[in-house]
Amino acid sequence: MRRVAVAVVVGAVVGTLALAGCQSEAAPAPPPAGWAGRDSSLATLERLDDHPLWTMRYAGGYDRLKDVATPPPATPFGCSLFAANGLFARNFDWDPNPAMLLFTEPPDGYASVSMVDLSYLGVTDPAADGARLADAPLLPFDGLNAKGLAIGLAAVPDAQAGSRPGRPTVGGVRIIRLVLDQAATVEEAVAIFEEHNVDFAGGPPLHYLVADATGRSVVVEFVDGKVSALPTRTAVNFTMAGSDEASRQADSRYRTANGGLGGARDWRGALDLLGEVVQGHTQWSVVYGLESGEVHVATDKKFDRVHEFSLTMG
Image (cartoon, rainbow, N blue to C red):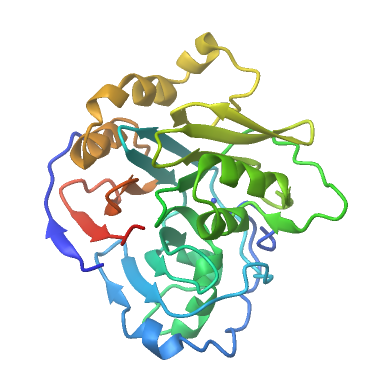
């Protein structure tokens, strides 16, 4: 997981964590206590650029169902995601906040790498407020695990998740952590959604693009209280269930991304395609290699400044 400097030229997401990953202002939670791996984790903390983007390798386990108070969103957001040719790529379009590329190796789950918006932890400077990073694993907005399973979220106008008695309730961001830790395939990821109630209260409704190393990809949505898993390679900010191809093509980002999948044959091509669908508030663009474990991430649409990492697969 050693960083390598790379240059590439490209055309130019919970009043509590039970939410989606975007919500309204609340006082930050007090710093967590008893983080056994704090010193080891903070020793790996590194600032990568002026976004700022940070990276850290999280040592030890964490409570996947712990409550975490998070602030609400200030700006409507959008995202573009696609999966093709062994790659999973996404633009995260949101408020300008510090971000972190986080590596985790829980003793009871798969190793993974994920992107975190640090504002949801109440963190502006990780070097000065490292204690709050204890909860960083609980807020992944997209990521890849060591089995080649990748997932990312995007807002939609409506999602009717429903609530089924006897099933644990988690937020729209937290469900991503459960999937990264416990699912090796798209089928297993969908099963995790079906085994939980997903609560979007206080934040925007969401859907999720999920892909695995076999080449399968689906968009997971909530329709009439039920989980829908629709095969697709591209997702933006409209509900796929019930849509037809004509309405999908009417969305310019969907049309551009889906139509350009053939050219996204390596990470450079995938970043190039992400560059074609950036918005004014695109915060990061990331490409995950579903088989290779390679991660390429750029912030603030600066595609000539790409950070390269690698997740050990297996």
